[in-house]
Length: 349
Ligand code: NAD
Ligand code: UFG
Image (cartoon, rainbow, N blue to C red):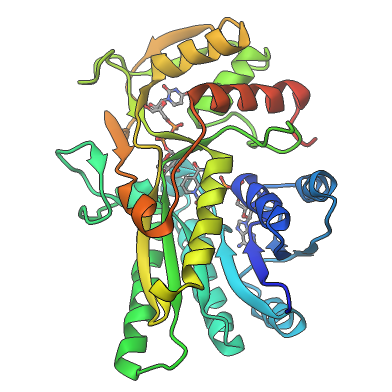
């Protein structure tokens, strides 16, 4: 039997590179398209080194319709894992058109080329940021959506488009319907246990863990803790941090579900990928200090605009329908973040 081939968009990036590694290890054939807007080919080299298996890499933009067409004609792609996108919330407020063009239009071009090629299995990287404000802090998939910035809205729009695609199959009685899984990530952190691939942010990191890691290694002088007056157990923001390896294992489970009996009629379903456990900023700093023995210099700073006090996943639907649960704990996340950071103080450079 032919191997199941997966097209990974954004496969050179942080989460995509970990997905490529997990797919190769699980015996899938991997084709990557990435325009390297926020990544380097070194990640792809290292994935091949770690697994001892080759993958096919195209340096191209998903908005380049001709390249996509040629990829679909040259490879017998069964499923697409779609990670490619811009992801910085602050930047999306400054450059909304870039975000909508890259994320929304990019997905339109991709989906149209998939349909032409008869490829209708898709796993999409969505985000917990699509959820609207809620009085409950543990988010379930049926909660109302209502993103509050252009990045989040680009994800919400893509979710709508993909739901519409699946709904159209029902009206048209499409015999080969779309099978789509939307994965709403909470806060991915950590790195592969080899320490060879990890998150390599451009410039000063926006996110907590890469920032803490760069303070620990001496590249940044001090962490600003954004707010200590939230209604949380220690006043600092609480999030659901999830190990990137657990996260990508959730993608493999989603892929298996798409090809299984539960999806025979097609459809589009959303799942949270989180641990279900929240940690505060100060708890994360404490864990980092305890596990690495490094002192993290920090100060309390004003709240950051747009931040929620507390947000974590209800992960039960993914457990029930995808047979997936996060397995790694906070110490694993910190240990692996630190191994990557200390072995690669300048990332892939
Ligand atoms: P990343 O920036 O490391 O990876 C994205 C990759 O996509 C990069 O390699 C980039 O070069 C590539 N890319 C961007 N636009 C492209 C285009 N038009 N054509 C081809 N390649 C393109 O980000 P990541 O953290 O690995 O995130 C992967 C996906 O997960 C993104 O869609 C992101 O929005 C989503 N997500 C990430 C987080 C997070 O905290 N990291 C949380 C929720 C959702
Ligand atoms: N924080 C600090 N100091 C920093 C950075 C962050 O105190 O220098 C705090 C934030 O205020 C927040 C927590 O650490 O309380 C986590 O912040 P991150 O920026 O790491 O993560 P967010 O929860 O804000 O956002 C992340 C991604 C978004 C995604 C969202 C939900 O950056 O893209 O998770 O998936 F949409």
